[in-house]
Length: 162
Image 1 (cartoon, rainbow, N blue to C red):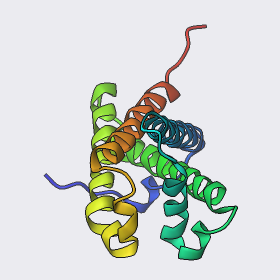
Image 2: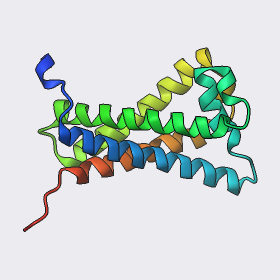
Image 3: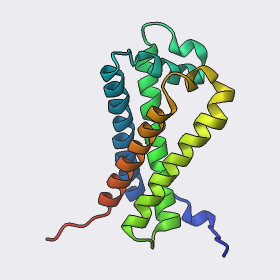
Image 4: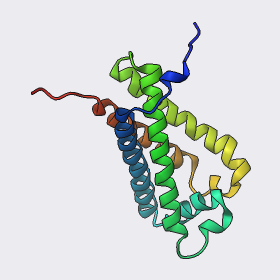
């Protein structure tokens, strides 16, 4: 079976914008809350995670007083972009699928993104970041993004009875 996607179907619609921004904001926030909670439970400082995000783009960005805030801002900007991409992909590729199938696809996509990020991209771009938290902790973080985004996207198109 082959899938042909024309350029006309890969457009950002207003519903994608709303759903994607909600999914990205909700997913990104879930990751921040998870990381802050896990670090607090372990009596560890979560600042190195945020600094590592910033340093992945440019090592100097993670330094100084603004490194943590900049790392969180970069994380949330990437989360919003990812939410938008997922919203477009779900509409374009899975529009006719059931809600559970779309939710499972969103969750699986986020797990795949985690694997690519931690086993391919980060070891090349910022190897130190890979060791900031255990793999399981970072995987749970991305899985929570997947759950949050799936919930946001499944509810974004729901209609209320008049």
